[in-house]
Picture (cartoon, rainbow, N blue to C red):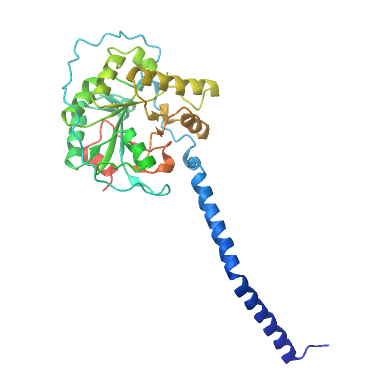
Length: 333
């Protein structure tokens, strides 16, 4: 038997009125519950540690061939070369501190990190490998002048970490200059050129290399001099080990013992690690953080930095044949 049309409409109206009365009566309760859910979600998001960038943490590495690296077991005289001269005694000039408030973790800011290894002249027929990981001293000096002319101000990783973690101000147009492996030209070329311009550099030296420092590699005496003049040093493990290819115990020793040794030598904490070969993965990142580092560097790519990639900060490689126009094309417009 069918329900009459009017009876059906009456039934629908009664249901609609009941629904509206129920919603009106309990609207305050529903709103309160929704507010509590949102508040708890926000609290949980704040309480969670910053997630590691696993989508990019899969060993983004450009392998540095062995010929471009010193032998970690090479015995080099610890006596500084007779050609070394004392660098200027002036300290880096203060930089303006006007900048921006650190962005939310999901946003990014333009802070280029330039990457250098060798600073030395190469023969015209030098291999592409050596040219890839080298910059001529006069090119380096010209690049520093160019960066200053464009209004860049060099900073340290201590400042970068404080910016993202605590909202500390940075100078306008901040940039980081990094030097890997502890070659002697970090002391004979980079150090005096930076000091002359009131700029700072960030140097990453395997501790075993510093132990053997002398004619080819910087030693602890030179490292201490550079540190006292305002340069920053960071970790690069003990032996320049590929952290993705060793045991967990070896990884922890390479990370922690090298950090402890550098801090004991300098008398203050260090903040950043440069992954040897740029090799890393989620386990390496987690152990780096557990070892007490606050940031870490890879070998590529770009200049956008953010709080959620502090353990996979990209860098811009500068190579032998790069012109100033090439350098400009790698920097923020």
